[in-house]
Image (tube, rainbow, N blue to C red; front, side, top):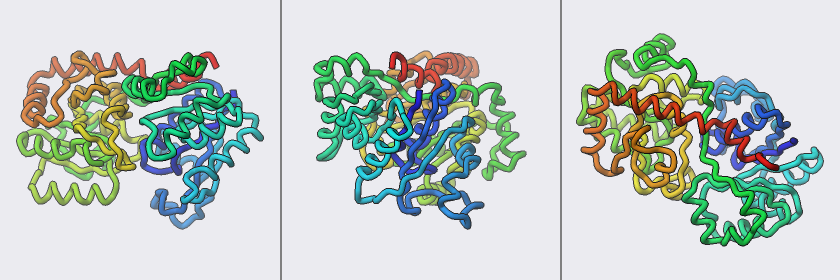
Length: 403
C-alpha cells in the first residue's frame, strides 16, 4: 500500500511524538509498504539543528538523512517532504496541503495524530487512520473528533491505551459508529527489538561508555547503577530519584535526557546538594540510547500522579511511554510507579510496582535489587520476554490488519 504519514510536529525535534512518527514510518516500510512522510516546517526556532550543520541552509538540513537516522535510531529510507506552515494557522494549512498531495501521490491511507487532518480528510472521503493519545481537548478538539467519526473516510481509530479507549467510548459513544468501532485498535507504543539484541552486560556497557568518551560523569564500572532515560518535565519523578540518591550513596544514578534549560537546572541542583553519585548525562541521540540503558542494573520510571507532556497537559491517565518498552527489551530490572495505565503492560512478574510518592518504598526496593541478583534476573528475563509483543513492526501490522 501507499501510506502517507502526516507528522504532528517538525522533524527533527526532541519531542516523543517525532520519535514515534519516525519509528512508525520505519515499521510500515519494513512491512513492504511505500511510505511518504509529510512534515510541517515552522519557523527555525521550533526545531533543533545539529551543531556541525548550523551553517548550511534549513532546506539542506531537512534532507540530511544520515542525521535523521542517527537522531532517531532508524535504518529504512523513506520519502520525506516538508511544507512551510504558518504557526497561527494551527495546522489547518498543513492539513490541506497534505490532503492535496496525498491524493496526487495516490496514497491509499493517511496515517496521522493530527485531528485537523483526520476531520477534514474523513469529511472529504479520504481514508484516514487516526491515532489518538489523549481525550480531545480545547474548544475544537471534540468537534474535530466527532467530525472524523461521522465522515466516510474514517478507516481506523488507533488508541494508545485501554484506559483511553474506555473513556472515549463513554464520551463519544463509539459503539454507535458500528463500522469504525469494528476497526478500533488498541496499540501501545513499541520498541526496536533488534537494537537490544546482544547488548553488553552492565559493567561491560559502562566500560564501553567510558572508552568511547560518551560518559562525562566518571561512572565506576563496579558500582551498582540505576538509570532514568527520557524527558525531565514535571511529574517524571526526577526529584524522587534525587532523594533516592541522597539515601543510597553507594549506588550510582544516571539521568539521561532533557532540554538544555532543564539539564542546567538539574545539574545545579545536584551540585548544590553535593550528590556525587548522580550523573546528569543530558540529551543523547536515540541511536545511542540502548548502550546507556544497558549500563544500568536497574531502570527507573518514577511517574507521579500528575505527569506533564511537552504541551504542559496531564497525561498520567493515558500515558504509554516508549521508555517502558525500551526498558523491557533491554532486559534490566524495572522499578515503576503503580499507575493503573502502566499496569496494562507491567505486572509483579516483570517489574517492581511502587507507590509514586513513597520514597522509602523506592529506596527499599532498589536496595533489594542491589542485594538480590536472582530477583533482578527474574524480573529482567520476564520483561525481555514480554517485550516481544511490543515491537514497532508488530504494532504496524496490527494497525493495518484487514485494511
